Image (cartoon, rainbow, N blue to C red):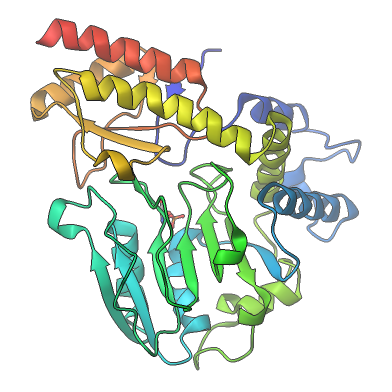
Length: 360
Ligand SMILES: *Cc1c(COP(=O)(O)O)cnc(C)c1O
């Protein structure tokens, strides 16, 4: 068996300890004689899995009691509709456009109400986060929406926008559990888990209790109503059971690592290694302004598309996989999520040095 260093933006690298533990339990989960994949979601064993997962997530993030944790399906993209359907009481919302995912969320919300795009970094190919200290927040906005870490462009909000008292809704798909957060600053924090937590198919929604109501837009499907899932403790229908099980294992791994403060330090150390190299490189160049750089997704270019392609190809041959940039931006992107070891980034930087020497 040989494993590569996988720099994919998602689905992405998972901790090897978690994969091994899951493999060990594949045929017989804790004496049940069956795999978690084969087990009733109403069974005692699964009830323990989902309850423990929630308790561990609450502990890791310090989630207050007045927030619910929902394990849902449909990926982050289903939330693009679910959020307006549940929150747009006035049918108005403010969106900050920092890349493709915020753009898509705004376009989807527009099906349900008026969307004000109150700030954007489209003018410079989303290479920075707009100043959000004094935004023209709409008087009647039901919420302000952000994508907190921009997976494709490699930017991250270092301070949250001043929403002037309005509810903040944040897509944290690609920075979930990468550092501590203050949950009380948000109405909803949500993310697809396939970037930093688990297998695709599960999305975690952390939502303040008072936002869970029956007062949703007319025609909202039962399955897209937060109250349905909150009332049923995420067991209204069959949940993405195996995904939740793996997420639970990753939460335990994060706790064993020392929690989110420690993960932040580790992630900063990894990212620094790569950014420091990029900043002094004569061949490679980071594409994001230093103050808004993501700790998770690091885009870079040589400025020559043929050389970029050669780099991606040779890196793959050297066991460094999925370094090609998003299809809409080109160049390269290294995603260095929680489970990417420091050694993986060291290997990448060593390879980049060698490539630079050979191609200058
Ligand atoms: C990947 C990603 C999405 C889309 O996730 P799906 O689960 O494929 O719908 C949305 N937002 C962000 C920030 C992402 O990185």
